[in-house]
Image (cartoon, rainbow, N blue to C red):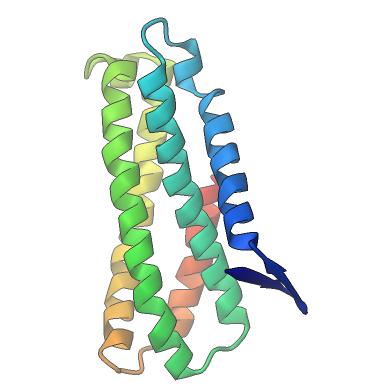
Length: 171
């Protein structure tokens, strides 16, 4: 495959972009909590890399959706893109939550650590942001479902919520 950048078509760019994303996710894993873990780190590094890749795919996908909105797409284009994007985002969130849960177990150690440690405070903040994001996602899902059925919902609201989602994901 190729990726179009402006008027340029770059052959093999999809593989290059995927490889660069993998390097960023794996590299980031080596700066995560796993780096300070005294036990066996390899599984934690691997899980963290996949966790990061899911977060990057979600953030990048929503950011691209915002750019798509600025292109003033036709209703047919919106109907073609939104359901596919929604499935991608749902998969990313599923992976993110599942692996995040698995990673939190050894790092947290106990429920008491949720309020008694700096990692617990960080996790509580992340869970709060995730709850906000999932609330936006639920509202957006209703709009996407209406688009998929062929209804003509107010997609401007969807675009604005996508912008907010990008901001929260960056946070």
